[in-house]
Length: 417
Image (cartoon, rainbow, N blue to C red; front, side):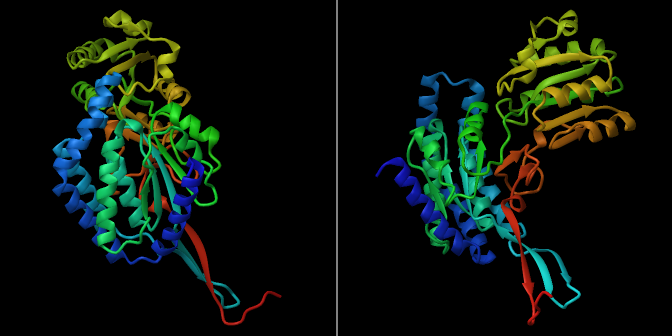
């Protein structure tokens, strides 16, 4: 069986499973998630053995420390996956929610009701926890899913998926509700993107090259973000301690993720006082700084190029630019950002409100780190991705974002005149 035939078979199986999942009771779905969480905890040692195989290959390939960090499964991260499933189990089931209802003048009773999308294809890189998060959200929202993880996490993803599938089956979930492509062949992505007859939406999570390829090749609607070029802007009236704390956290708390800050903007009146200390703290944590001309007059750093303003480093690298006023900061973010997550540090109400209104991003912050852009932190239990699309969902995407709507009309013989 070649790849296209294999993907067609997987697609048919997923479609059949989705037809059963849409009417699966919440009690069965929640019981499955709780069972899978227990199994993840119990199989922690096995998961780390498989993860070690991926880490060894990654080191041989020369993956950066940030990318290896994204890949690693620690005890805390395995527990985090399990907690995510437990949390999703406690969340309200969106399937069947009535979002609008009314009675037509002729007596027809009309309602708009949330329904699963159907079959969700997820193509992702590096982070093995995506396997558990994505499968859990799809199951809870009544969707079948087809998973294609990156080759760098092949052993980890396969082990997590097997545990998920075994636990789901034990709880009474239909077969093929969750499937993972058991191949590292890059051609599998192209074959998957042709399955528009069976897969309803593609959700990619990964680097710019992967996302761009999917946008170019997919016959299936795509919900994604190309980059996570996130900004923090320090206004002239920002509290010095807060500004430093937020900037350092946004960049260095976990630099290899999409909600980490990639560009720091700072008002020219604040820069002489705040920037040297921020730079010292960043440097002490191993961060390389690339600055504009004015930045380089204040601190010792590399010169930033035009390319730096549009680069998602996912590494311990930060570009810094000094701006003359709030308008310049907002213009820079809207022009060079990726509409993901951007923050302002300010004591002023007017500056904060202008930033919130005028920055065209999925998530905007006042006096907080961009690192909070995460489905778990937003009370969604987990996330299947962070969308910078404007149709049909934006920001952290979880249960409600994995549903569509249909109209249900009940009558007693009405005909249209």
